Length: 179
Image 1 (cartoon, helix red, strand yellow):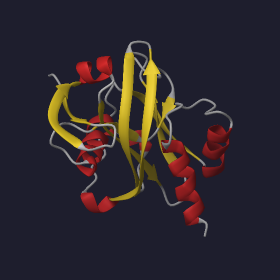
Image 2 (image 1 turned 45 degrees about the vertical axis):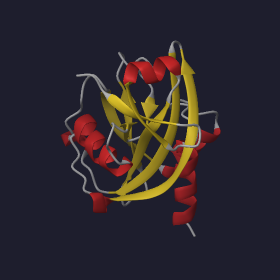
Image 3 (image 1 turned 30 degrees about the horizontal axis):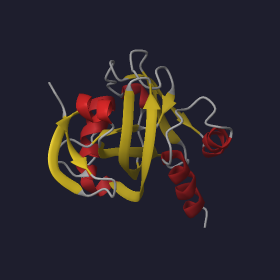
Image 4 (image 1 turned 90 degrees about the vertical axis):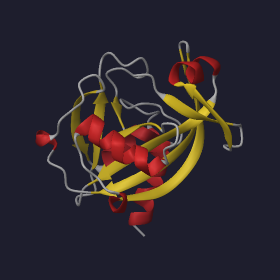
């Protein structure tokens, strides 16, 4: 099924147009994306390993869940959908907290991802052995300690995706928790 995104201008304003995923990525049209970090009571963050068939960052550890905001959706709706689709995790609107937004530009091969990103956190206990992973998206999941993920981020994204902005918001969130 073809996915359609709301097309935004360079300021993040809705243009009233929608385009396919393919056209947005081919022409570098601005659109929305979301990220959620699920953090447990130990302060660990749940990471997913992207499947080998992903065009961007295959076989690389990534945020808990994320993806594109479909045409007509709000970011928080996309988070709920993506968690369910990718991991089988049921969240509701009250489970997630908005922690920031930013823009990113990632070019990998013939894909131009111009995103207005929204970042969220969900504090939740999850048994990673009971998750239903979407095989075409996710190959495995694991919990990682706060200090270890911060070290990876500060070490030029060692072993994790080099997505602009999102990891820095995770650090900012951890800093806020420690105050």
